[in-house]
Length: 124
Image 1: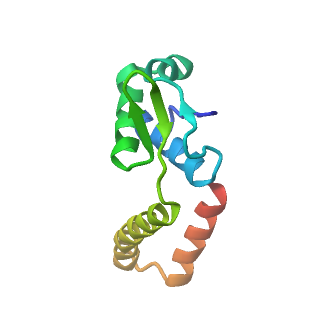
Image 2: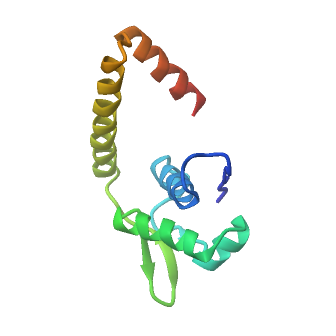
């Protein structure tokens, strides 16, 4: 599993870790039952605090992406991908409502807004 941390990102490191693991699961790179590194091993690999990786794993566990079995390790959960996709759609819609309100208040046209979205979508 390859995780890249950006110190110049405005996102906290634990969110970067959780996001990349989440995307690996949704993309099928990590499959149901796959083992994840221990919190300590991941922290050591990424050269970050154990607290940081623990927070990322806690967030992923709350979202049912991963499961921790005491004494055995952490694994990708057997989650319904369609349910997760629907949850992400809802989150995207909420964020877009906020962005559209800002765009309208700034007199940004729909075409300009779409152009911004296209550019950002292609970059990520």
